[in-house]
Length: 321
Image (cartoon, rainbow, N blue to C red; front, top):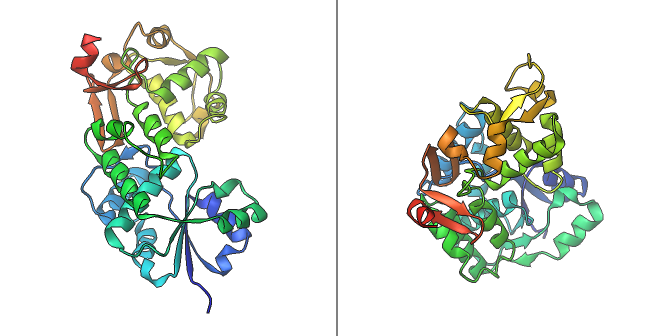
């Protein structure tokens, strides 16, 4: 009797690779496509309520973007095997812990869950088959840690997530880097820039007058995030009350379209002061950004990333250092 398998993958790229390799003929493929590293992910919501919130965040209006995805998950008992395909990137690891937390809450069956720790979108059919053959059972310890990380990520304070770095995370070996990268997206204590924002601004500064597409392309050589997030950061720098970027040539296109990507931008004097830690981006321009369950809003935020000691500090501790 054939085994009925559900493959839950990190996005359309991996899903397409699995179909090309023939996995779609022997099972169902479910794309778990939600870049959880940006936008609201507050704690205490059911999967349905969170999916509705995330759908409105991505589409601007529709609350049904993830309904079909979630409906497939609720029928998980119909499958003999459920294989999670998630690699080492932050987008993969955050989706993985979301799923581990969900299964830990909704399923007591420890026998059907398997993990492939690889990004299938980069693999051709033969390596995909090898990765599938090397899949490992997901242990109760992995499910429990996944749930802890997920709840900490969704918390309204970064303290729980930061505390996890002092604990044993070896059962999910890639999660430590993901937690660290999420904490580094908090505003840095002197410049007020997140790690990605600093990288983008430094890239533009090093290139001189350049196109946003060139700056984003350079950053994506070493960053596995969506390009839309980086383009939005560049747009925000140009429209801030105290701009960190300026248009080097008159821009007559539609600002929130792909036309912005080919414009010419350069770093302002304010941008260089912020990069040098002589001015604070949050104090000057404010912030409105979600990192998991934490909403950073206004011209003064409670938590900052301290690069020297590599941890989150409160405003009180920041002032004392």
